[in-house]
Image 1 (spheres, helix red, strand yellow):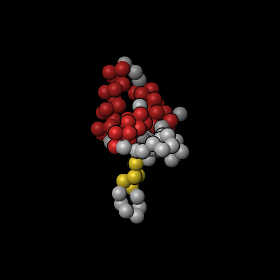
Image 2 (cartoon, one colour; image 1 turned 60 degrees about the horizontal axis):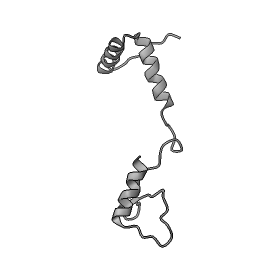
Image 3 (cartoon, one colour; image 1 turned 30 degrees about the horizontal axis):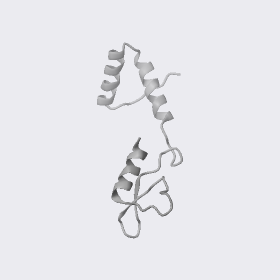
Length: 89
C-alpha cells in the first residue's frame, strides 16, 4: 500500500541514515520501525507495574514490593534494597 507521510526533517534524516547504514530500502526500515511501535505495550495491563507510586493523600512515594517477606521478617533498608534490585533483574 502506498501512502504519503509528512515527517519532521530531522526524523526523516535519521531514518534515511539508518537505512543507508544497514544497506536497506527506506520503506523496509520505516515498516520495521512502525511494527516495533505497534508491538510496544499500549495498555496499563501490558506495562510492568512501577516500583514506586506517589500517595495521593501525603504526596510521599510508596515503594511497591512484589515479594512478600517471610512472616515475622522485618523490612530493613537493606532488605528493601535487595528486593528492589531483584525486581530490576
